[in-house]
Image 1 (spheres, rainbow, N blue to C red):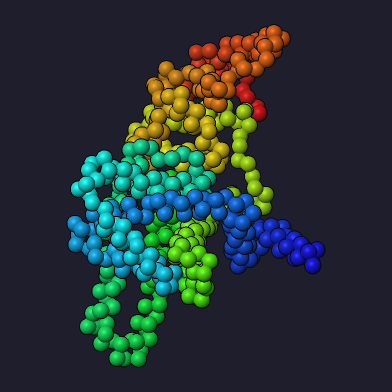
Image 2 (cartoon, one colour):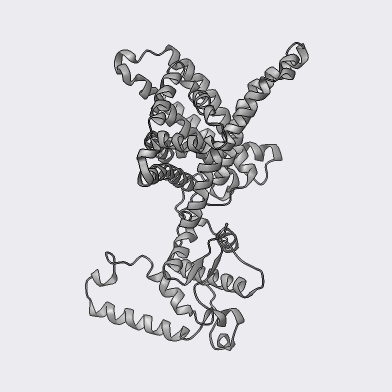
Length: 453
């Protein structure tokens, strides 16, 4: 039986990966792309396990942050007179928990109503905000991992973006829910139900509107949360899959909860048990949708073997010089700037490969990142004062620190002699050459043989 299963699995993998993609007809190309994205997403979820770990981590953070998050949302919505929408919305969100949904909703609302903002004071309120912000930061880290982004938002962007989510997010969510509820209670809507044709259309509307709202919410999350540029179509495709899965699994989970009798085992903890499981399922679905969006937008990552996207030392040095030269070129050009995404596309390497190089240049202050959105890259000092040797040293010494440094290696005079000689010769060859010299192509090139590797 095992050999038969392995043969089927091997045959499926061969069909997905060994089919000549370039020679296949258009319909087959689309089918192969879908199968490859599905294979990679399942691999990341079940075999690699990282998506599972991220989802589990978010369950813990969500449990800690849900009461402060709702408390902050209530304080925001009170200004719009919409704070009474919190409980119905929470009931709708916890609908997959069946009869335990209202029980958990009542408990959460009682915790929120028990918060006395007057007694909290400024310090307590700041701690409340910190708990909410830490949840959003944890979500960003999970999405950045899915999108292979190692760089977090700057402090200024984090402050502005997170507070936008905290302040504007609840208003948008509950406005959408309120509009839907208002629409279904209008006289015109009720009158249309008397006609069979309109009644059929409205029944379809009632069936699809929850899916549409969830898909739109997921699309917004996939575009906004990762610290990289996510295109609308990939985000929408990931959101469609995640939204349908979320609504469908919610219905199945509700059916299971209504029949399961875990009270005999978990007693009063049964509600919490199901609540944690549903939060885990929800985060898993959301991260799966993010993974689908990532693979759709980045075909270069669709590989059967999980690659380690690292550069050799030689490539790091060359990439650093090429990047700095391009940045200097934009620096001197009028009204022309370059972002990290644009630089990555110019270098023709993956973001996670070039990220350590960029980080080493930022740490050495040879490169600066602006606080604009998206952040722009500019030289850390004037290109005519920035030498090639400084750039190479910054890349070579990037991983050295107080714990890992060259003096910890065994002292050997022979190695020291040859290493110093090599360093001195290399430094002498490029001594005095600035980034601006490279940009202008000065006469020094005529006295140096061109690199052919």
